[in-house]
Image (cartoon, rainbow, N blue to C red; front, side, top):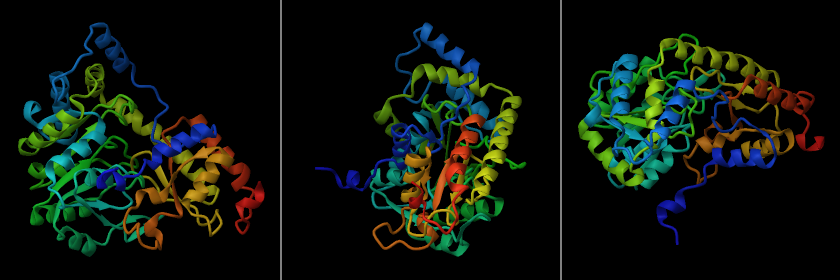
Length: 408
């Protein structure tokens, strides 16, 4: 017999699509795994830690050397100052940080505010804490970008919200919060006594001159914000599972308790290695942005030539793509996504997996994401080019009025 919480949870769609890509020997553009190797200084540091037998439990909230380095890095890059011994917790990736923070800071039946499209881990975090997720749909989701109705946002904050989750740069759309939206959220958090949880894992992946700004830097927000980040995306180390939660001591106390009993500690040898990553100079980050800008600028136009309507990514390494002009009108994102992975050899993520609002009711309009797919451009140039070739073989030759099912 499953608990009511487990009954609500569903298998990760992203990880399911990765499995399907393996079954069909498809190119995996579903899960955000970089093809680029982890920087050599970090690999060398892992081997050094293992050779020195630095592979037992670390102190539960992280090795002192890594907490010190995270404190320096957060201060230098984002102007955020945290005390390493009481305000920084090393977690098993941002995913664990989300579960620990929501569980520690939200009372049963209080609301957690989530903005759709929403990364699939946030909803389970609320459910596992016996909180109630409250979703804000976008007022606009189109190639012109992502927008939210400010009056609806204000009304949502007034509904017994304890915590709001924000993700910028955004997964799945690549949207980056502007100052106006951040000020709106800041004012509403202060006025309604709401804690903010900011997932900033893509903070170093910004394009077209955009700069990352954390909500915690805004007046009145440092003492009510939990900032999550980690090594997975910036250093291409998604399997290392090293992240960090930075928050004032009054919030970190609870996060550390949850973290302690969930995982004890993040992998010790990899903690030591991430220290080396955080010490890399600005040239590393400039190269990172250059590589992903190039991939974005070759892959997104390629999708658009095939008829996809793409939201131009401002950050992160995903593109949210509408397919109204390509697939039959009676196909939803799952129909098209499964077709692409099984017949065309390209795995994507169905757009509806980023929408949770009113799932029990008849679904209408763009809110459901049922005419959208998410692609990642975190893969190599060669793999991205091959994906476009595979899509072009069928999609580029199909008259938009025809049903894809006639082409098998």
